[in-house]
Amino acid sequence: MRTALAAVLLALASGAAARERIDDSDFSRPELSAKSAAGLATEGRATADSFVFALSADAAPAPAAPGTITGRVLLADRAGALKPARLAKVRLAGTNAWVAVESDGGFVLTGAGKIAVRLDNPRWTFRAKGGKSYEWEAGPFPDGTDAGALSPVPGTENAKLGVLHLTYLDALDFLAREATTGWWKKSLSVTWPSDGDYFNPGSWSLHLTDALAWDVVLHELGHAVMGGAMDARAAGGAHKIDECYSAGLAWSEGWATFFAGAVALSPDDADAKFEFLVPRRAPIRLENVPADVCRGATNEWRVAAGLWDLTDRHADAGEAISLPFRTLWTGFTGGVTGSVGDAWALAAKSLDPLDRRAGEDAMIANSLLPARAPAPSVDAALLSRAFSQR
Figure 1 (cartoon, helix red, strand yellow):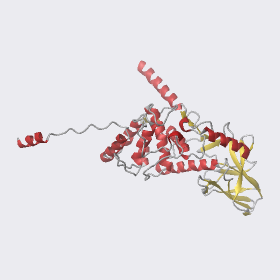
Figure 2 (cartoon, one colour):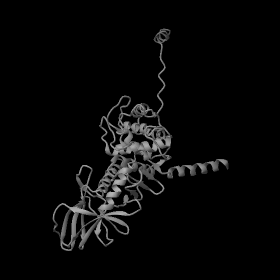
Figure 3 (tube, rainbow, N blue to C red):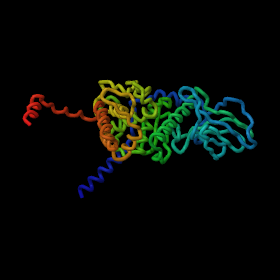
Figure 4 (spheres, rainbow, N blue to C red):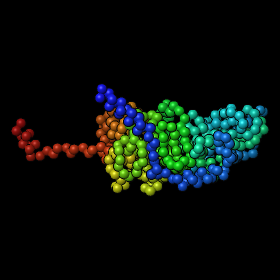
């Protein structure tokens, strides 16, 4: 009876830990959040359920098939390059007949009037603090019009939503290519600008202070990936990237940072590093962790660097291995993990002895596994005498 009760209490405790808010205040930028909130308030108008902003057109309207409005929705990335707004949806303002844009950003609407655009889709939705959605509007256009390329006005705060959307598209493409998106069963609610950077597994929501901070954005998404795809006994709470705490929290945070690097950094980079993550210690380097960072599997920076060394193509002292991301993914999602050690044990099962040994070397070099005991020394004279007596 006591054993059963203990098992129930352990399960309840594990569930509570899994639902705990994952607080990344160590790299939040509340001053940028306040700036964005102030800018958004002056750029659009509020409706009952949304904030509406203006779309700009790159050319004068042209003819289209009678009875239709056509066009393309494009979003500017951090460098200003325009890219298709895949997964966005459009409608004629005042209707609820949403149409998904094509992979090139193109759309066809039947009728005439203003065009409304939202980036909400089955994978994620964007919300302002307080719950209002974001929408853009252009026109009105008469039927038989090609509106051309439409995009948020460059340089505005609301245009940063486009950057955020493109960052998530990069992550979605990476997962589709290197792992799977089959675990993504419901829409992730993304609040920006928020009062901090964190993931709340209970409400399946992300909160962000800076839409342009790609590494922070991907780190927070990494928490959602762990929550949705893995059976991870990870911990939440506040933490400092250069300190040690618990193995569960270090595993959760280290995975999230590694995920951000896997999506956006080159595995050939001899000095792979992040741009915005943890401003007080920036740049956060994966290849070269500073000596003053706490060592061991209870530090997230060490965990992230160790996982990176397992998959990157730049050989360091103590490691010479480059595993496909899918190999780690298959292992990490194949059982229960409460630490990076658990995760490595699952991934190592599928490796041949040489790769397993090389992987252990990389983990040891990052202080995530204990060093091997030195091989016993053999006295040459004793060995010679033993052979001579045969």
